[in-house]
Amino acid sequence: MNGADTAWIIVATALVLFMSLPGLALFYGGLVRARNVLSVFMHIYAIAALMSVLWLVVGYSIAFGGEGALWGGLGKAFLANIDAETLSGTIPEVLFFAFQMTFAIITPALMVGAYAERVGFGFVLTFSGAWMLLVYAPVTHWIWGGGFLADGGIFGAVGVQDFAGGIVVHETAGIAALLIAVFLGPRRNRTTPPHSPGYVMIGAGMLWVGWFGFNGGSQLAADGGAAMALTVTHISAATASLSWALWERIKFGRASLIGIVTGTIAGLASITPASGFVSPVEALIIGALAGVLCQEAVNFVRNRLHIDDTLDVFAVHGVGGIFGTIMIAVFGAGAWAAQLGGLAIVGGYTVAMTVVLIFAVKAITRLRVDVETETNGLDLSVHGERAYEMNS
Image 1 (cartoon, rainbow, N blue to C red):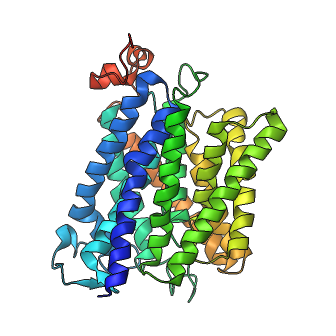
Image 2: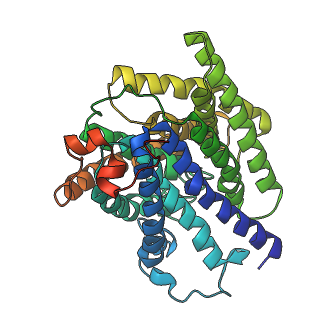
């Protein structure tokens, strides 16, 4: 065991959990109407709790329990035969388990943004749990756990390169989010602006800070590679923030707070898969392109496809993760066949399994709330609480 590596991954684990709680909760909560903010908080908080338990029970074992081509097996269910002295590389395996658990939390939590303001709470928990075990955990194994897309797999010695989750996290969550939005249908009123841009900015800032653990921690060591991953993450986020704001100013005559912080998230999602492979200058290019590309993807999904992905999960996370994965090949750090093939295989599997799960879960619990609940807001109707006193 290396003490420095262990200390850094402990910090990185806390940072990645901080991304979900409270970062993502505040970011998404500020973007919805005041009568739905607590429902967003509830969804993300409950997902964090449920994914933690499921990751211990069997999720970790599916992802990292062995070197099978398709899944890791059940040998590490409930952390069987793992104690404080068991190592994974230079860190305790129980710490590696905890670090990866925070990824298993945030991936289904990202989807909350697509179905906010109209989804049934039972559907959120049932679908998220099943999806994490049947989509996220197997895909994690394929790329990070020694499966058929990893180094030495079907694409040869250099397999699919995904440093911190462009495919594993962002592509899978983005595609699943878009499909749920399609099956749900649009909100009855899509024109109400975000109720608290301040929440959105605070949440985005927390995500930006937490992303240092997300990408820097994926080096699994306290070394120069982690420092470079952290640095390029920051550069991409900063550049995408500016390019989004500039493109918004060119197109609409003003740059908004919501826009610049959404650009930040686009830059972070786009650098995620490439953060262990690119230089600061290459990160600058990725961020500059991501701010424009993801903004155009938002417009395309909303205005051309007419899909009500409430908080633009696919356009920002899905498109950003896919773009960053391709840029690994553009900059020569990965093979074109592996990068494009990995995106296609994972994308196809995610589509198929997500559709099956939507129909399966919809058969046992309500997918969408009724008209009255949606009109009155999920906070009071579903959870019996209000975020704000009406007379204040």
